[in-house]
Length: 487
Length: 103
Image 1 (tube, each protein chain N blue to C red):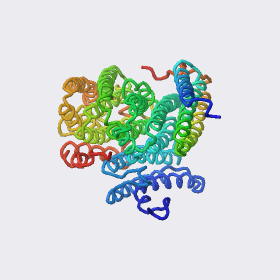
Image 2 (image 1 turned 120 degrees about the vertical axis):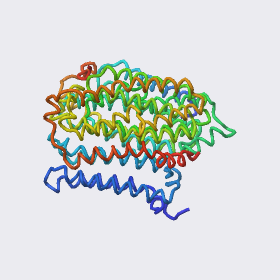
Image 3 (image 1 turned 45 degrees about the vertical axis):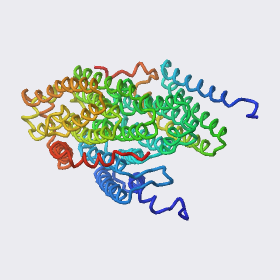
Image 4 (image 1 turned 45 degrees about the horizontal axis):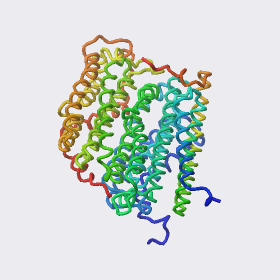
């Protein structure tokens, strides 16, 4: 036992990414009144540097992997993967937000501080191995993102998005917490490893009670990842929130929520897997079907991407339903590919939306290829990847997920999932056709010239999408090695 | 004191409170009432934690209840601020009036 349990250097190094994020987030808020100029460039650059430092810290922490703070946190490959993923999403959110915030005349330090806090919460979720730490990470992430969703506070749609996100998010947290309380009562512990040991041990609590707790947590987490039948908030929130925030919400919190989803259900609740598998199966199918068919009917691009994000949550649920390490690895790979392509697609929407986010409909993309061929080309990469065309990350993501599902004998789910991806191709292609085969409209003609930061915001996720599609082994090997979670 | 009341009664009470919170959230249309229902859910959770902590004679359960209270307070601060901006922009607190994004 170390002399001081609080200032144990090993623990602190394993917690370093979160320390950096919270310290810098606080510093940005303190700097704001001192600097006396409300220019978000300074804070944005500072946040980018913070996120890069946190990525390095996360990788460094992995060189000495292990538990921290008495097993409350666990730094393993899985945690590191998701830490780097949410930090990367943070970078891809800040890059397009420079020009977006300037256009909306809403450059403040709060945006960046809240973003850093939210990412800190997600980073904690990625590494948490204790239900109450998971809860705290979830709330740090959620509370900051409730504010971010309503960041443009004079915009009615943003208000509405923030309110709906807040109400349904807290409601979901209540379910999750009640599940935690029941688990605590049944097993006397909230540590996932201990819970797993008790559930499989000789004094196992009644399976019904564990099942009830698992069901309550399932409801809470399904809300957070916007999986059916708890997806109703997602379209309104993604449509109403400022576009860079929508991009962030659809990738960062979702990846982190899936990280805890996988960790809880594949460790603590793995022994009762046969009981929750049908639930996940149904949720996966419903999410894919509702998401894809509703997306067909949308005319607003942000709303369409929101429904498509529900469908993509469904694909990841297929990976969870396969209940295998191959499935976990496939889910990790898919979430990385999804983060790249979805954040990229939202970045293009934010570029085109104009002041007050006027241009959001599919018609507004008309003729983009003539006016800004580079932006159109980048969006094409993201859309093709979202469809799942070979040589993109989206293809291998779907391939690995359905392969894992087949290995677990989920034949019907695979068949229905593949049919679903065929349906999805239609609404993504509609956007492509609009960009390349129509005459430019008002939106494409008035689109601003590219800034260096915004070009980077398109090139980086495009590189990510293509690398995942051409050299999938690099990421998949790591994911496969990290998929054996500590039980 | 507690010896006279079986522990299962506390658990039942918390289950009832939880259900009331869920029902209130689903069936009430006033945003503030919905928010209060969420607080009711969190209090039901706290009661459960405290009951189990008493049953197991562990201090951990009490600590968990404190964590929940702190988070609930932070959530209330943010939530009420969001409700206030909604009211400022629309002068309504009925959740059904918030439908500016239907296609």
